[in-house]
Length: 182
Image 1: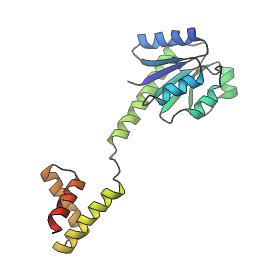
Image 2: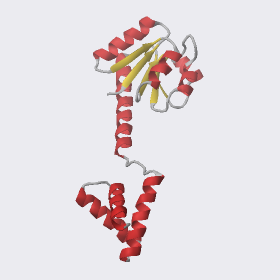
Image 3: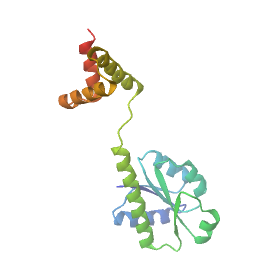
Image 4: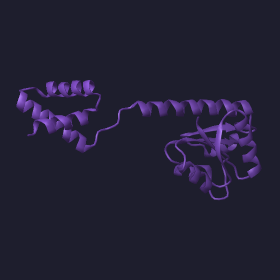
């Protein structure tokens, strides 16, 4: 579930929004009244959404948006006048007077998008370090020299051994290097 930070200059407003969101099943780990509190909370969480008004004692929403970690989205609750005057790209807005269904629908949409990005990020294979790349290249070079293989054949051989032994490519390359280097 997506973390939601609620930020309004009046604590009563913030608590009312939090209570509404919690009743509807959202996770709200922080309720804040200043931009600095919201930033501290956001930096301690993986990703999420800040639901906020446009002005706080220490900054405006635009300043907060500029300082937010890249994994956080902003949902601004403001009047149409404020939005048309100060609106900016990358900020989603729900206009006042606040309609509960609009707020909840917008949060659902934003949460779904964050969840989609999270899954995409996790499914992406991790990059090998330079040292791991070097080990793989050394094993391929050794196989190519000793067994007259092409680079593609050497790579396929390491892949097959990796799958057969249940180890990752780098571990298999290390085993090949240790076995063939004597």
